[in-house]
Length: 180
Image 1 (cartoon, one colour):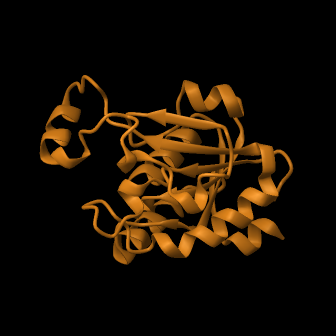
Image 2: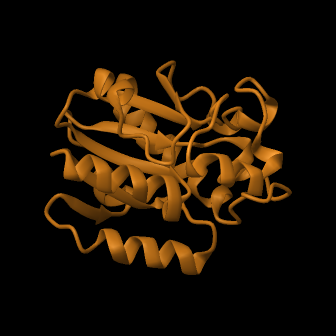
């Protein structure tokens, strides 16, 4: 992994990993080991993000949370915890009530135009939202294909196809490629 890169593990939470959750990704178990290898290489340059619902949702977020009432829980609810298999990756955690995690909070850690190595869930929602916004702001993105879990294999492929349209700002690579 490039020594100046930041590994950002997007939303590895129970709400997205638990097969019983309406938002659970069937692909999540397969990303745990690649994410752990990437985090070992990135060490202190690892950030974990968490999606949390806004206490006072505005605009379309109100309709979104009305459509998914199970997700309207306090920020400290067990549903929003990082999964046990990945809870020890880092002490640097950024929690936001948005799909995309490219924010002032994340930039305070990584700087405004970093090289981000992205992993996490869901590729077709929070990962793609983060990647496109960060690239648009001038960050260099490496999307780790085998360290991201989509809501379905078909949606995973669609999201990867979209992000593949953005070189050189966004490049797709496997964890093996990144760790080489």
